[in-house]
Amino acid sequence: MAKFPKSSFLKKTCLVLVFLVGFLLSQTDAQKHNFTLLVGTYTRETSEGIYSYNFNSKTGKLDLKSIKKGLTNPSFMAFSPDHSILYALNGVNLDSVIAFRIDQNNDILQTLNTQSLEGGFGACHLAVDHSGKWLIVGNYKSGSISVLSIESDGKIGKLIQTIKHTGSSVNAERQTQAAVHSINIAQNNVDVFVPDLGMDKIMSYKLNAITGILSPADQPFVSTSPGAGPRHFTFSPNNQFAYVINELNCTVGVYQYSQGKLKEIQVISTLPKTYNGTLSAADIHISQDGKYLYASNRIHESLTVFKINQKNGTLKFVQNVSVLGTIPRNFVIDPTGNYVLVANQTSNNIVVFKRNKRNGRLKANGEQVNVSLPVCLKFI
Image (cartoon, rainbow, N blue to C red; front, side):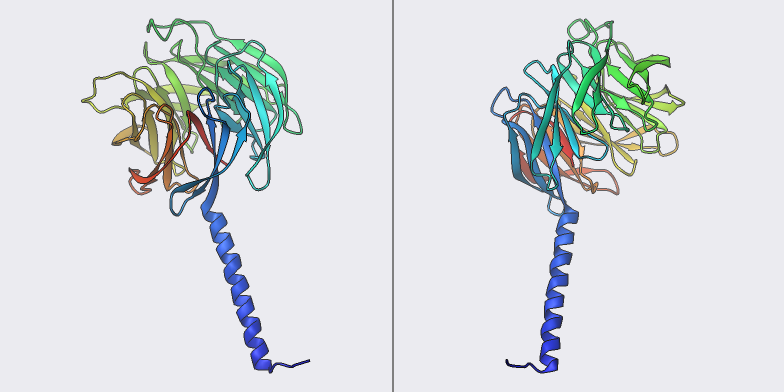
C-alpha cells in the first residue's frame, strides 16, 4: 500500500477539517437565520389549510415548505408553551378547535384531535395558559368564552367552562350584542383580559391554574369610550402597561397595569389627521425591545408606528405606511426584530417590510407571497 509523506497527510487532514468546520458553521448560520412561518386561513375560497413557509431573516424572503390540507377555516392559531403543539380555530361556523403536533423539522403538522366548543361559535381568537393545561377561546358571534382542558399529550380535552357576555353599546350596526374579540393572559398566569367589541368593555378575569376556572376579577371590567369597539390587546415587555386597539374608532388605548387592574392613561388615533373615511382598526404588537408599538388599519390599509415612552408607557406617532394590500387582518414581527410581515385578507397576499430597529420605521422590501384569505401569522 502506498504511503504518503507525513507533511502531505497533515495537509490533507487539515483541509478536511477546515472543510468540515466551514460546513458546520454555514449550517449553523443558516439555521440561525431561517425560521418557520405558519399562516392560518379561511378556506371559503381557494385556501387549502395552514401554510408553512421558510422565512430567511437575512434576505426577508419567503419560500413555501408545506401545506396542511383538508382543514376548514383554520384561522387564528396559538402554541403550547414549548411550541410543540399548535391549536387552531376550526369549522364552517368556527365552532370547534383542532390540535396538531409539530414535527422536529417544523415541516409537517400531525393532527391530534378536534373538540367542539359546545355552543360557542364564530370564534375569532384563542390562547393557551402558561402552564399549558388550559385552552381559552374567544367566540365573537356567540359573545362567549370557552375554557377547555389540555391533556398531557397535547390533545384538547373536555370543555370545562362557558362564560356568556351580555350587553351592547352605541353602534347600531356592530354593537347590538356582546362580541368577544381576544383572550389575553398576563405573565402571572392569573390575570386574563378579554376585550369585548360589542360591549365597549375590557372584561377582567382571574384564572385558577389548577382547575382552569375563570372568575371575575376585583375590577371586573374597564369601559372604553362609547363606540370604540375594543379588539386586540397586548402587554408591554416590562409588564407595566397594556395596550388595546379599538376597531370602530381606530384608536389605541394605553393602560397602566398593576395588581390585576387597568387604568387608562392615553387614547391616541391610529390614523392621519387628514383621513375622513371608514374606520376599522385590526391588530396590535410591540417590538421585542419594548420601544415601538405597531397598529394596523383596515379600509385605510396601513400600519401605524408609535414610539413608546419608556417611563410612562404613552405613545408618540412615528409613521404611517401602506400595507400594499387590502384588509390587513393580522401581522407579526419576526424573531430577529428586523422585519414585519402583514397578512392582507382580501388582497390575498402577505407583504414583508424591513424594520429599522433604531427608529422603528418600516419600508417594504419588495417581497410578498400570494395566499388565499390569510388570517393569522405565527413564527415557530
